[in-house]
Image 1 (cartoon, rainbow, N blue to C red):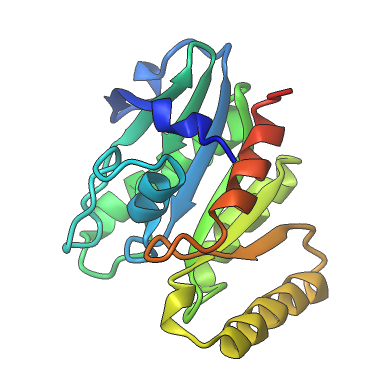
Image 2 (image 1 turned 90 degrees about the horizontal axis):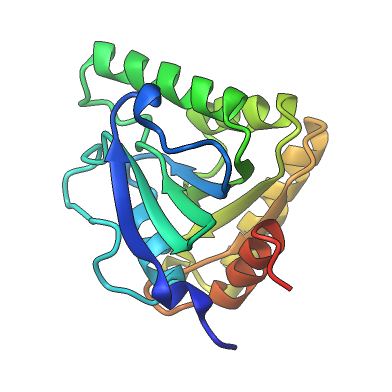
Length: 199
């Protein structure tokens, strides 16, 4: 499968919603806990090593970063959340910004939610899931770092997460993903292609 996302390039970073580009393109947002592997997932999906900056220090992504797929489609990297060592007032500001962006952004087509497969569906994840669902926004969950588990363990975690979502009345799609060995990249591409309305 041709990876159209290899052409993705850094566009801009904003720290306040008033700095956002014109609300007229197609956007897909990536969000996740600060140590879930969000930057690595973006880089893997885009077939690039350093498009999204990775760090050994969780919580480094404090801006909303835009990556242009083409002239009218953007991947949006939202600030990581849920990291204990970040000051409370910063966490509150992040939550406020994320909430306003997800609730008001007309260009936003869907949310790609990144979770470590070993620690899925924690409290901050539920906050974003419920926020997206109440905004009638599609949610697709990447259970990352699946290479850390055996195939059987990975499928068990996947099915357990599906069941938990269903038991809470949440309609969302899920998949296994590994930036380390490329598991699930093609499936992620198909979701993005659909949301970005590629033919």
